Length: 260
Image (cartoon, rainbow, N blue to C red; front, side, top):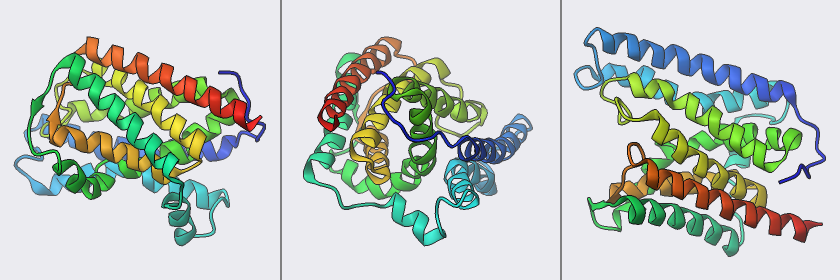
């Protein structure tokens, strides 16, 4: 995908967001890792959820700080208004659902799955998943991807955002008591790459941060009902990611031609 965005890359905004994000995450999750090495874990000490949770919200916190610092938002209410832009046409919402369903179907059908809870639990879990992942989009798809898209174009921006997003998660694989602990970072990174392209597509086509958050929420909620392996099943992760990338490129290509 060739570069088509004529807007100017805001290097300072991009750098401010990443630096603040990784400082907060590094300090908080680094502390959790050190404590874990000394037998102090989330499973036995509830207070460790405080630095753990602060690290999980690092990109969200950094989003507001960086945008306010660079005069991109006037205040907290303005920031929230940009994130929770609910008013979009039905096709935009259908795009989100279609991409989320495609990803979940591919992962479960290729890699296998087990039924964990009734399907309706996916809907019930959505509000929880806003906190458990969705709000990350206030950073990655509000600042990181759009700014990279201005500089390098869709494909490179989606790929680089995926790498940054995966690396941000890396400390979690070393924190005892966390879902990712001890699992394959490679399998996770491959899966994240496909999700990064899907999310970039949603952001590019709809311009919405909220719809990116919704996609993130759905993808995180599905395994509560239909459990599939995104870590050790490299075949399922790889095929799913390839399909997600191809579909994303097709959708964005059609969208770009229509805009022109």
